[in-house]
Image 1 (cartoon, protein in one colour):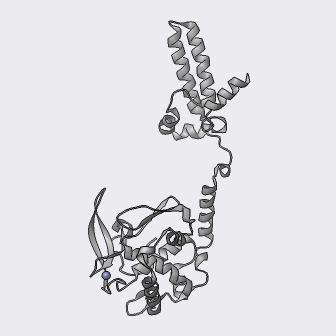
Image 2 (tube, rainbow, N blue to C red):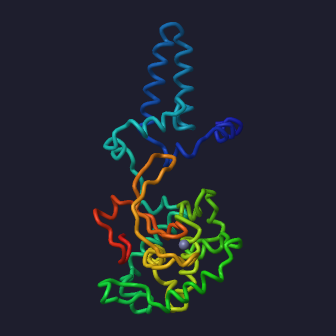
Image 3 (tube, rainbow, N blue to C red):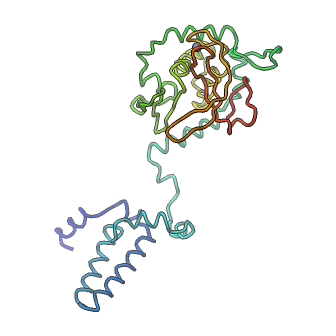
Length: 293
Ligand SMILES: [Zn+2]
């Protein structure tokens, strides 16, 4: 092949559909399509049919397919069974990009370093068992320190770096999701809070845990998030207005319909602290206790 032809082929080459990424079913489907079209053309112009067929093969070779859209179509319509038969991918790890690798490492870390949340918080002096309530509650000292940190947070100055710290993320992986409630995209996942008060409570919760433990950051990030939610869940009085926090069931309207939520909210200023989907907590959710997984 002359250099010109080679460099021309290189420019139209689609590495995502050729080489080790070639989709064998797509290639087969396209060769069959090329053959059928060639036969149709051959009825009138045999030479043209031959040229067309050869040209089709070259295109399929360098681009992976002839008819635009077939990779998507086969992906969608070809039974998985056939796909599995053709997909002779090498060991999965080779396909991981750095981000996926990070995720796998994270999951592994979370599995290996899991703590028993109740035990951990009891030991740290965050919660205590209340025999009168027959349930756990936040210790008075913890609530005092939590309130102290809450007061120190200026809602106007909350930024991406605060959210990044909550989820061990890099600041460049955090963006404001710009919703009506506090929400940020963190590493491609949207983290959201039912109200600004709930959000600030979590920021304060993260800070206060450094006072109560010296290994808070070794606790897996998702468990830390769950525990911060627990601090909201177990609050008895609203840090914003002092009103009593209650468990209510209410109907919420959103873009996609209306549904029931279980809301733990302030009986005075109506700020929501936790919102739960009743179908996930069962028939009678407890007002207290650790939030369900
Ligand atoms: Zn309130």
